[in-house]
Length: 536
Image: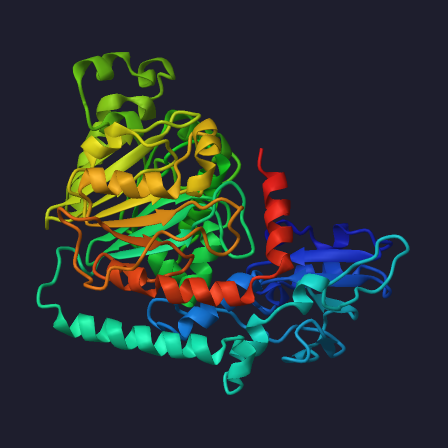
């Protein structure tokens, strides 16, 4: 913490460290005491500085970004390019100019001399290697994984289409499907309810991140009302920052609800980071954020809040409001109220059922909802799905992690969109049952039974690094399901979807599948094995 730096007179003049690390979100060069502190190190010391104010921000998960860049050629609106920077945001203070070769030959990261900072300053970047014993200067050089970075060269040289690794046949297929989609779009005469509601998958993998998919999270943006985040696995804030760039602060201000289905890490370990970042906003958020989850998740966050400000129970009215999932249960029967776990898990005010129920009503008013109900589903731990019904007539049902369950069918009847986990392929039904998950076919069948108009499949196993097994033939009419089969789409990280565009993604699937098939190699198999080894 820069603010905790002691006065220079209290710093030992004989610091003998060979390396120092500075982590700062603000311009540390404006704090004279810190500059004095750095100059107390011996001249041979190496100073490694990590700061968004000074360092570059290249894409780390380049495989996912390269996939996105290629699909950008199919539909630029649906598959936007992630935000990144290859140069410095500001010049770093140093007595010597430093050139880092991390991004070579794409660009040289050069920082110019500014007085008073010691020599041997280095910007922390991916692949900066530091030797502690024996001590030595940091070295740069691309790691094996980075030598396979196709994204940055392709995006910085768009006049060289061959870098996209798209065959002429794929490009022609893209053009043909775009033409057909445009033709059908012009022929559509009726706008469906909630057509402009945005559904943005931020993480579509299960258990562990892969090179192409982050773990579970989906952002639902309701025009003129606010947003709902459905689960937030590790790295969710990073996904938001990559997608929205400088506008990520506005997205956090617009966030009205986070729903966390259960306590498994791939669904909740990104929540605290989002709350902390929201708390740091300047200007701050002006509306409350309703956090709907089970008791254990709230308890964990409250313990964490003792060492980091997460904005819980902020008296200003714009902080985080605790809502226990049980209080919003779709049954709301007397037996459930009086015998539910909430009664025996604590006596603190935030555990009160009526308090959570009242907060749920305020949440509905804020977002213009008719109802926001949790639905018990069948998983290895206590887990809830959710049914979100809007006053305008559209509805979204989120399954969370579950075996096929009739309770979800009953609670989500007639949904405009069912977001359902599809962890396993249909050939892995036995394993899916053992792990309390659903297969792709089972998820689609749930949509049929629910009479859902659209089904968005997500939460794919690491067995499928890029593309899960085929879900069938695209429906050429682009009409909503009704009494017929629902429109089925596969979720991809950072895909800009709306309730009214699911049919487009459905039609794109054959081309997308062929695109990934053309570039799959032994690396996919290696990643699949490594990811599966990390899953318990």
